[in-house]
Length: 158
Picture 1 (cartoon, rainbow, N blue to C red):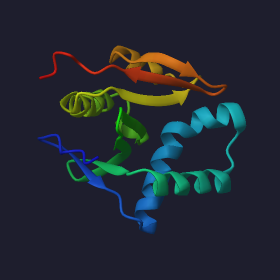
Picture 2 (picture 1 turned 180 degrees about the horizontal axis):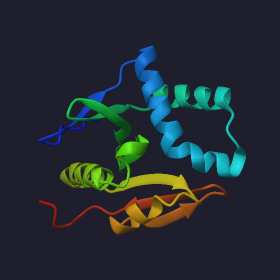
Picture 3 (picture 1 turned 30 degrees about the horizontal axis):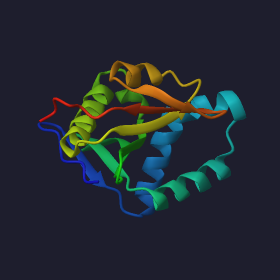
Picture 4 (picture 1 turned 60 degrees about the horizontal axis):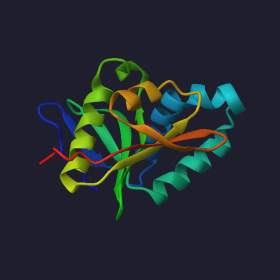
């Protein structure tokens, strides 16, 4: 799903399979998710690179740019019954500034325009869940490692 730019300063550009873009997207993931992976399993660089490469092949990834500077990644997939939101990683210096909330709200509006719910998952011990709950996501399931969340379509979105 194409994510339109969010004026005046946020752009979403589809990642291309270059070494440079792989490395940026991997480092964004490592900064944002790495501490939570380390907490449970430790960090295996080779394994994490393989997993990331697989995710890049499976999902459409956007590079998030703020005033032309790459600051993170996002995957937004329009599926028949819902929009899948994921691979949302901001590099360290851009977390906690409200940028993530702004991007999430933008993506939720896109889903509202499609009139379908949004689903995501995140590690049970990752504090990002507070962001999702503030944006009306509710738990619809759980695995041994992840919360499965959904935000229903908005009836008043049109």
